[in-house]
Length: 201
Image (tube, rainbow, N blue to C red):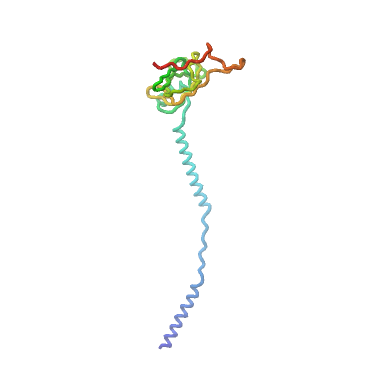
């Protein structure tokens, strides 16, 4: 019986050895599939397009809000309801005799009308005038009240509900002109310097 047991044990060990030899052979790993490059490239392209589109949209919306429209006086006065409170730039000509100044608190007040070269009929119409208030102590040197007129001014700011223009910046074109015959700047009629602003009473 022990002999038989030994044979069975030997046979069992032999079967295990044969199975072990087969298991010891390294199994071949399944080949890894390379990631699909075109799919990855398409995903990256779509991501970049979405980012660029978002930036362009943000720029356009922000630019629209920050845009400053430049308009002549007569156009501004025909669109007061639409433009009230919006930041705009108005181009016009100083109405002679309207530039006045207050010292405390500092403020300049003046009236502009359309530039005659752009709209002669509107420039003569007393109804087409825009009162301007500029709450600063300093104005450009070229912005003087000339009795003969011709002082072109651009003001930046906004229309108020009260009906005047509250300026934050004032730009003036020099009304003097270069005389090629005398090689000098032409002076105002009557010689002398243009008067400064009159005080506000």
